[in-house]
Image (tube, rainbow, N blue to C red; front, side, top):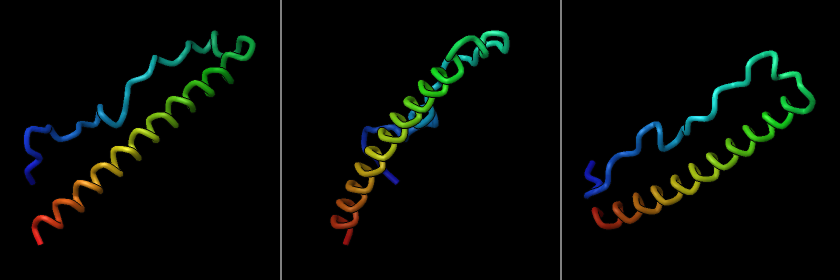
Length: 70
């Protein structure tokens, strides 16, 4: 397939690296585990939203290409 001047997406476009997990001794301090999980959930939801937007854009482009070919 030809994508013009654009590059194909890499796995890094879909999966961003996050900070390393806390050491075990720091995981049980106050609400740290809960905050950590909330932060991770927010990051995951943001990545999912970006992936869905990217999927919608690619689907739109694919439909345009199909119209052009047929």
